[in-house]
Length: 255
Image (cartoon, rainbow, N blue to C red; front, top):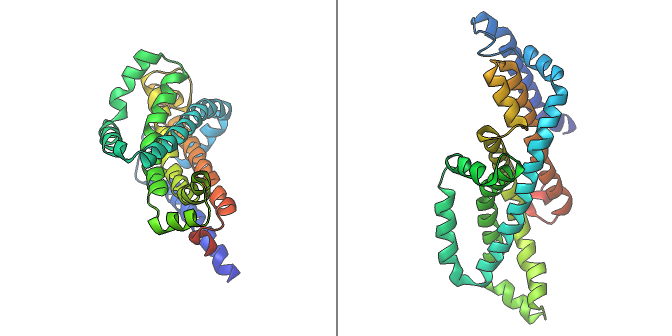
């Protein structure tokens, strides 16, 4: 049983290693130029050469991403609470948010750069806007979709509105919110990077543009590796929270 579990954990790594090996050997055999598809060894070497730049760029991008994500989390949950406790607002808020969410954020990104400048403000706002909708929708579902019998039983048991909120609604919503964070985190990162593409002088997006303008394809791939690692760690942190704090969740009890 332990060997099967270990094999299941190693299978993705084995697949990735096989893919990289095929890439390393197959690209030269197919005659693909290095400036089009650099070899994994060249990407690793360029990553090592630019490690300090990668860390600095990732720090700047990560800062704007996390600030935007936290703002989206706070505002999204609060807005969902308002809609749950004032149901008449649902028919107003939902269409407006859905309509705004349908607008490609890259189309409005230049406006934010004009309005808020080339600093971190425009990146934070873009990260916030991209992360807001999934957090709001999931929070609304978790806070609102509770059986009326559960609320009635909690009231009969002497629960106040505050205790019903903290013990019933909020606890029901937390798994929905953590699931939303797994979607919102990469979206917030996209928002930050788009902001750096449009107007920025720092961050991992700026580093990608630098590699593009200089035809430094290994640097672009190295930056993509940094982004992948950062995203994986962020989603992994949310998953770790679920495993440690949401042990009552059925999906966690089965593990």
